[in-house]
Length: 570
Image 1 (cartoon, rainbow, N blue to C red):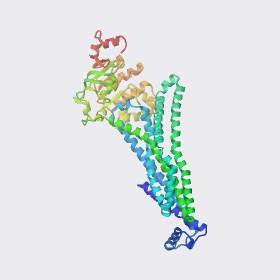
Image 2 (image 1 turned 60 degrees about the horizontal axis):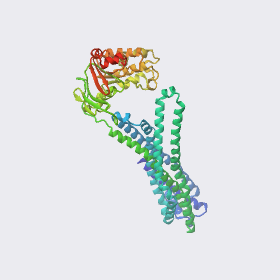
Image 3 (image 1 turned 30 degrees about the vertical axis):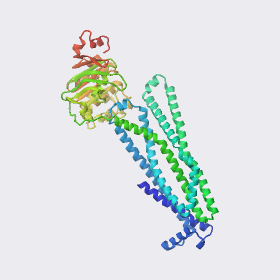
Image 4 (image 1 turned 120 degrees about the horizontal axis):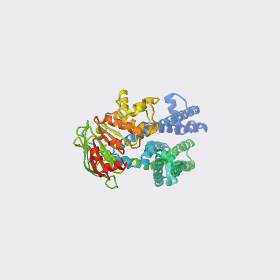
C-alpha cells in the first residue's frame, strides 16, 4: 500500500512537471494574455487568485525544478518500497521453506539432489524475491502508465489514440517473446543447479581431490559448468534488458509521428510540447513494463523449482504422533521389522531386537549387513515397511518424534562438529547446560584433558567440521555433546572404527563408565568395543543370524561371531 501511495504521488508530480511545460513554452515564445494556451491561463488564474502572485518565467522554472527534484526523491522511496517487498518475501520463503525441509523424513535429504537444494537457497530464492519485487514494481509502473496516459488523452484524444496504435504495431513482436524468456529461464536454473552441485562436491571432497592429484580436473569441470551457465545467463539478461532498450527508440519514433500529425493539424505549440513531454515520459515506463514482463517470465522456472521442493517436502513430512516421550522405561523393541530403500532390494528382513533399559547392546556384522539402517530406524529417521518398532511398549510412530529426539544421544562414525567453539557445540546440544555440566561431559568422554591444554579451552574455535582437532579428539567431543544432555538412550554408530588404539581405548573407557547408568546401543567393528556388552546381535545380509551374550557367542563353535574373531574381522 505504501508503494502504491508513492507511485500515485510520483504520477501526480510527473503530471505537474508536464503541465509546467505549457507556461514555460508560452513565455519563451512570448505568448501571453489572450494568446497564451488555456493551460497557461488556468495556471495564471490559480496563482493570482490563490497566492496573489503574477506568474512569470522564473516561477515556472522554479515549479518545474522543484517538482522534478521531489519526483526524484519519491522515486527513491519507490525503490525502497520495492526492496522492502522483495526482502519480506525472501525472509518468508527462506525460513518457511527450510522449516518445511526440517519437518520431513531424513530420506528427503538422503535421496535429494544437494546441488538443487543448495542452488535453490543460494540463487533461485533470490530470483523469486526479485520476481515478487518485480511484480510489485510492474503493478506500480502499470498504475503510473495509466495515470500518465490520462494527460495526453485529455489534451488530444485523437493524437493519443494514434500514438497508442502506432506504438503497439511497432512493438508488437516484443510482447510475444515469453516462450524464449521462459525457456532461457529454465535453462538458467538447470545450469545453476549443476554449478552448485559441482561446487558442493568439490569442497566437501577437497582432501580426496588433493590426495589423488585431481585439482586441475576439478577446476576444469567447475569452469565448464560455469561457462554453460554463463552462456544461458548472457542470452537471458540480454533479452530482458534489450527489450526495454529496443522499445525506447521505437516508442520515440511513434511519439515523433504523433507530434508530426499534431503539427499538420495546427495544434498550439504549448499543447504539442505537453503532449510530446507526456509521451516522452510514458515511453520508458512502457519499456519497463515490457522488460519487467520478460524478466518475470524468465524467473518463473526458479519459482517452479522452489515450489516443487516445497511440495516434495510436504509429501515427505513426518507423520507426527501426540504421545510425549519423557524417559525410557521398558526399553526399545523391533518386532518382525523389514525395510528397503526406494528402488532397492530388501535391506532388513524380519528383524527382532530388544534394547533393555540400562543395558549395553551391540550390533555387529560385515559392512552392508544392515547395522546402520537399524540404528536409523531406532532414531526414527526412516519408517519400517513391515513390522513394528515399540518404545516403552507403544509404537514409535505414535510419539511426538521431537520429544523422543530431545532425549537421545547420538555419535555418528563421522562426527559433525560445527565451526564454532567447543562451548557453543556443547550448548547446541543442551542450551541450558552450565560450565560445570560441560566439564563433566568432557570428563565422562575423556575429552577434558586435551580441552584444558587448548589455548582457549572451551572457547576454542574448532574450524569446519572440527578440522583443527585429531580424529580421536573430534570423536570424544562428539560423545561429550551427546552426553551433556543426559540422554535416555545413547547410540554409538561405529564411533571407534577409524580411531587409533589410544583414542579407541579412551572412548571404550567412557562407554564402560556409562554402562549401567545409560541405555547404550553400539555398532562396532572392533572386539574391544563389545567385549563388555550385555547382549550382542550378529547381522548378515540384513538378517539376525546370531544373538546372545558375548561370552556365549564367542565360544560357540562354527558360530558367526567366533568366526569373525578368529579371522580378525572383529
